[in-house]
Length: 315
Image (cartoon, rainbow, N blue to C red; front, side):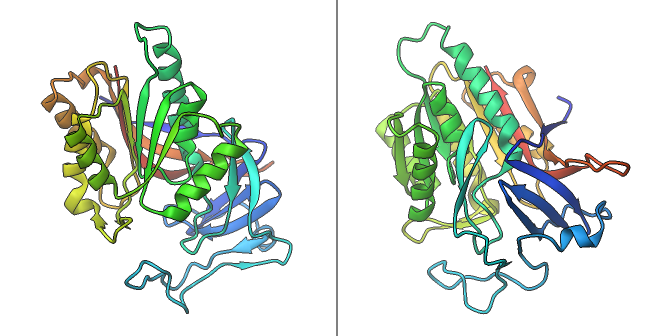
C-alpha cells in the first residue's frame, strides 16, 4: 500500500481562494470567509488587501473553551462579520445542498475535502446495484455531522443510519437532506454516542454492508459521555467491523486528529478487518485528504491544503 492524496477541486459555489500564514480564505456561495488553519504553513499568495475583503473572519488567537454541558464559554473568540452575512445560507457542493452557518468552533457545516470520499461511496453503491443483492444496501455513518456522506449514499438508494451525538447537528443534517431532495430517502436519524450505539446494534444482531467513521479528537455523547480518540478509537473500530455483513461493500475511516497518520489508520483498519476474516491487504487505500486552491493569474496558484487523513477498504 502506497499512501496517496485525495484532492477536492473548486466548484461553482465553493472554492479555496487562498491559504497560507496559518489561515485559509474560502468562498461559500457569495460569502467569503477567513479562518485559521494550522496546516497552512507557507506564505499567502494573494496580497493582504484581498484577505481584508472577507465578509467574516474567525481570529487566529485565543482559545475556544466549553463549560460542563459542552456550551461555549463567554469571552472566547468568535466570528466578526459584516452586516450582510446571513445567519444561514445554502450552497450546492458535490451534487448536494448544504446549509452554511458560522459555528463557535470556526466550522461551517461543510468539509469540502470529503468530496472524493463521496465519489468512492457512490461508485461502490452503483456497482453493488448490479451485484447479486435482493435488498437495499445498508450503510452506517458514525459521527455523521451534517450528512454529506449520508446524503451521497442515500442518493444511490442505500438505507442509511446516520449517528451523531448532537441534536442540533442531526437537525441540520435533516435540513440538508430536504434541501438535497432526499426528504423521503430511507435515512434513520439517531442522536446518540457512536460507541454506545454501535455496541447496542451489535447486541441486537444488526449488520451493515458499509460503514463510515469520522471520529473527532474529542467529543461529548448525547447523555454526557466523553469521547477521547486515544481512549476509545480502537474499541469502536473493533465493534464497528463486527457489524459488517457477510457481503460488505466498503469501510471508510477519516481522521483529523493531530498525532495520527494515514499509515497508522491503514494498519489498524487492516487488523480489525482481518480479525473478522476479511482479507484487506490488496483492497486497502490510505493517504491524505486535501483541497486544491483556485490559483491566481501570474502567481503561485493551485496550492494543496492538507485537510485530514483517511484509510478505506472496498470489496
